[in-house]
Length: 344
Image (tube, rainbow, N blue to C red):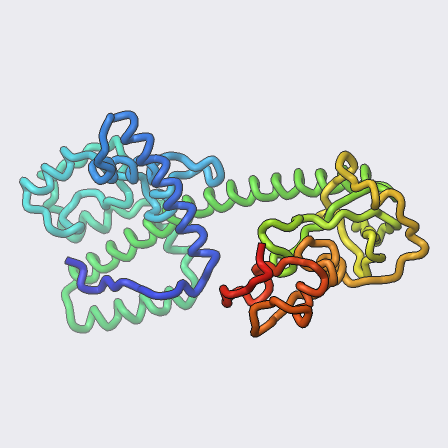
């Protein structure tokens, strides 16, 4: 049915787009579940058409426009009576319609019997709005159209030139209408995004003002430095607070040393209500500088000595760093080998 359609298989080249697809699939799954519950049905395929149509035609709270309008530049057309009349009168081409589909409104009735418009009437339909659109063409586009009309005049009749001009005008009207919908959706999206950003910046400013020296905060430990059962936050104390331009940076210290890097408020999690007792009693002046990765490895349960093993044997002797430190091997140690005897 669609000879130019092709399916693209394989690894997605843009993971962010794949994430959007997965979120859309999740929305569809929830909507289908509600449809099945409402209609007391266990056949999700029967509700697929109506559910997808409902998703595509509901107004988004972000763009203030339906997904259908953003994609096609016009409202959805489900008036079955119109298409019945089209079939009865054997209308096979858009030029046979008295009004272009792009110009027609949902509530406007179209008289199919008046489809016998000649070329002179087509030119008379060009109103002042269309003339304004034509004037807005770029110089390159005007030159292209003029050259096309010149070539056409040498080989075709005057009526063909008028029909060509009418089709060009309809195309301009459609592009103008589509651009207006896209602009409205873009403006709504950017307004909400800017509002969210302002709220987020205000939240960070308030959070940074509430954090003071000697307060306990947590920094997220990367998954490569811990196992799934290890702690996800490295508890630290704020040892200095500096303001550079509009940003506030914090120097931190954990029980293993002073972290070498400075951190902004986005990276910190308030742990005032859950600060470890041994962290409150440390003497910061006696601590030496340490990298964040080293501090994380020393803190997590599975790597007390700051290293993991990569043994080729069964980790049954003191040659294994983990066995020597009386620490069980974790998934970070030779994760692809399953004959380790030092696993819990």
